[in-house]
Length: 375
Image (tube, rainbow, N blue to C red):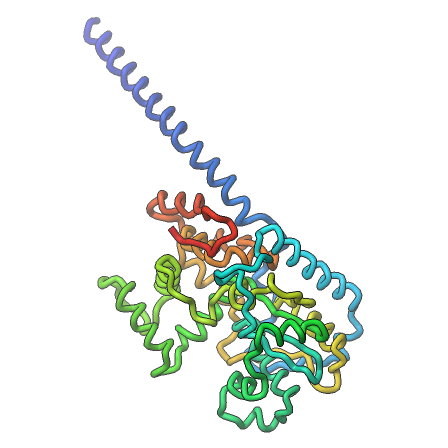
């Protein structure tokens, strides 16, 4: 009888202990869960539906017949482009990015703009956002023939700069007053992946980017890794990029945030085209500029296939904290051009160390209008 009472007392003690452990575990985890829900609401808000199949994959130059597009509802396209322009201006004002200052976000940068005074057209060349297509169009507008461009071994950018000098700030402002200005943007994480595939994965032997790839491998590849490719993997590249921003290094023009590359908040950009709706957007642009007989809506691709089809493969290799760190680097591009992490964050792998995810979730700038900082 006494032994039975001792067993009951012992079992009762274990039950109390288990309940205490469960209670304190819930108390600890619930706040973390709530922080995650609240903090990530900003990252994955459904600003607009996100689909990785928004564009048809292509492997060669594709000319889009203008007559197939001009019958579309161009008034609806005009309303969409008008909304984007107003949204950009409003967001620039809210974020304080329309105020002139000395840092890379608040100092007007005319360096990357191309001005065609003859046809009254101004464009900021955002790399990996239909830049090949529109560099071709601007070279046509500069007087180069299609045959010459096909046979020339000189890089299109070099040819363009022989005709379009780097404008001064005053010259750009003067041209903006009498020209149609436009910018083509792309989802920041799709643009980054496109830059990685073009300049890192398929880097030209002996090029600056091939040498950079070797440095990334040397520093970020684990010695125990086997069957690794000869180029940096996407996680290795992302680790290098995050560390570069953290240590204050300047970014390559192919993956520099648009907000710094073109400083769109400093200028009156009339048309904000998106690669997701590029067929209609550029058809409207060409029609509005009166250039239907000179240039055509088109897409030119370097032959590496659609980046859109590669999103799942590459972003599923990253952890969620890495994806949130990338968001932080391109935060202003997300905000200004109305993009979100919807469809991306879900692809990330769970972090083995929950503290890394929590640090990425709660990552905030001390000054919301400053250059993003990675902690």
